[in-house]
Image (cartoon, rainbow, N blue to C red; front, side, top):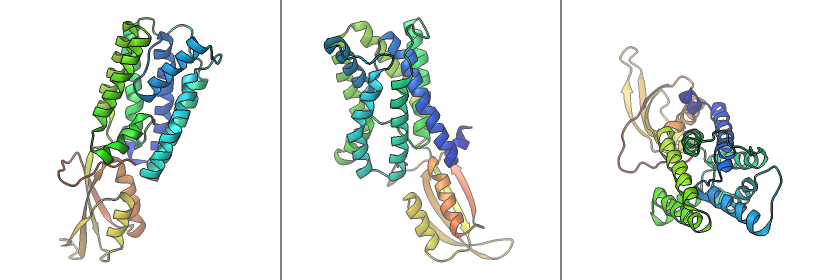
Length: 293
């Protein structure tokens, strides 16, 4: 099922919608009722929502204001992504961010937690949230937040996304420790760690594949179309069909798993008879970039 979602445009979109909805449901039903906080930008928005309520008395009945704050906070990040990242990735980013923010705002937070035991709620919530975010990443999307800024800065400054995310969450939970109590920080951290571990298990976006394309097209049109479609280098050599004796060109492309469908569409638009073989899970070194799409 997951492989089908990775390779089909409509299934990827459906999976993105499901992932965003599941993430919003998990936060509102497993985390917020216990007074816990996410990591990242969403966690910061939850802290601000709590301060607006407790310190300024600003409260919107029956909705979680954190969802609206999260959407507003993402606007400048979405503009940054639009200027510096691929348009396909930005479309998926906007879809997931807006849907998750709206659902977190409109889904009613239950008065009593779905799971009464705090630790169990953290573990179950972390697994479901990790599943949701992993599905979104696997299908080439993102639920927004500080990851956009981390990706941008990693390209400019060379600092890893993971390190910047950890530093931000450390600062966030130190703030929570100053504002709230140790119990809140400990269980919020457990939720975030479980989410991160499960996201790593689910995430297939950077699985590398190798495609071999056998075609009778001898010009430069097909290699150029592939490079334009997936922004990957193409190596080719001349071959001969052992059965027919026909001259063929063999094109070799290394790409990420989620780019396979785009490659197939680009090839078949020029040569519907092209024969394509895909090998997944290959190892690469050297100048191979992990794209966002």
